[in-house]
Length: 171
Image (tube, rainbow, N blue to C red):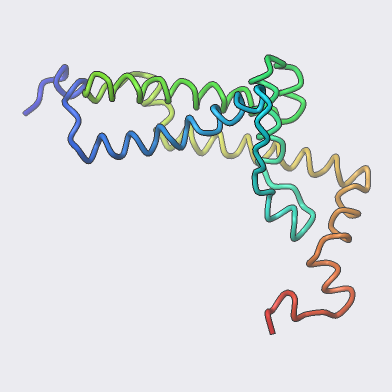
């Protein structure tokens, strides 16, 4: 049986290292891309498929622009693009540093913020808050008429309105 200290700090297995490297790449990549755009790099990212095909923004609508604004040092602009941008940026950055530290030390290190992030109850609360925020944004778009205009100009709506079902069904 491992002691509490051994459980909090144990050597990483080769599988753990590989998993942590993949996690680090996935979490650090959005941060790195955000900063590279400050140096004139033109990085074209794929757009949101939900918005492209239906004209309805997804819950992550504005996160990329929010991350770019943070990388430029403009926190207020970041919040205007997406309320959760600064929060997610901070989480990604914190976990990235934690993963790098674990990889350098070759030890699995547990701490309080990781327990909070991994707690399913907190994750569910976060998702409900995100969903509420997203629905509020959609409601504001609906009130201005922008949501309905966007949907009516989407490929799916145009296919329905013009009777070109083959674009949707593939037949």
